[in-house]
Image (cartoon, rainbow, N blue to C red; front, side):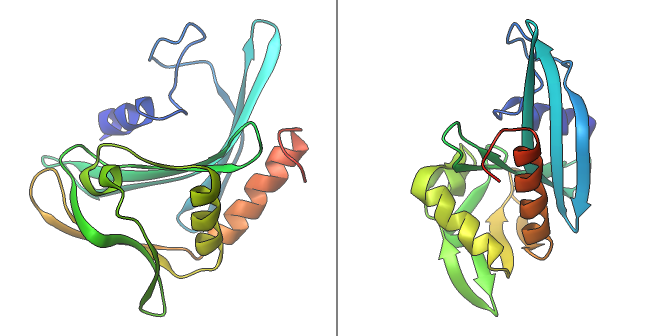
Length: 185
């Protein structure tokens, strides 16, 4: 299980890279970690040529199938240089989701969904700009994320991620960014 989590991080902008860009354990030091239901707010830092590099993010990792047919899905919310959200979902290659089944529901009704090919096939699922802002707003409004799909092993999956706890995680994340001078308060 540890190997998949490490590999899943390597596919993200939050990869544990050394300062030469090599994918291997790095020298990031965690300076803040808080758990809000299923959502984790994390900040870390490291020295980069005499300059302190800092970052904060919200993370969710769901290991939904144990070994020997291990499978997991993850979520990261970060901010861009322009202080706008960027949201990334990580699914394993071979994951297949039917249109409309990657969604946010509130009171049993779908209030947001995506039919982006990368999100439906596990080949890359990142939202930025206005698309990320819209998704973030829906997540802050509550409900639950629903993912109905066939995993890389061909097994049917139906995941529910309650959005309860996302709002406090988000406000903690924004406060931590402001505290570090990484975003507007």
